[in-house]
Image 1 (tube, one colour):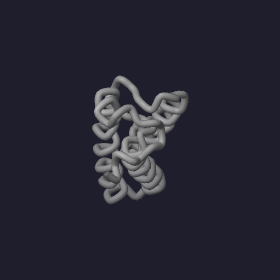
Image 2 (tube, rainbow, N blue to C red):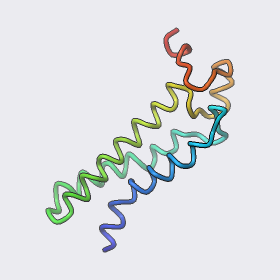
Image 3 (cartoon, rainbow, N blue to C red):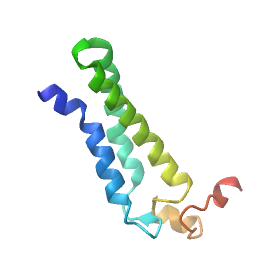
Length: 106
């Protein structure tokens, strides 16, 4: 049971992340969103390891791999589209409107 709980934690973190950032209307937060990568990347590696080594947990590992990859891509998407950006970086970009990617194309 501990293995199942550990392997599905990326799904839980992904859901919590989505709920935590959804009420943000400003496009910026005080903490660094890229800190989530410190969780999602090891979760991805661990899930791939479990997927390759443990036949009993392949379905759960696949779900966790999907959640970890989704989490990594969402963190990058949030930054590129200015949906959730660390405050200092947001200020350096000229206080862009949420969803504006004009800074990225310059």
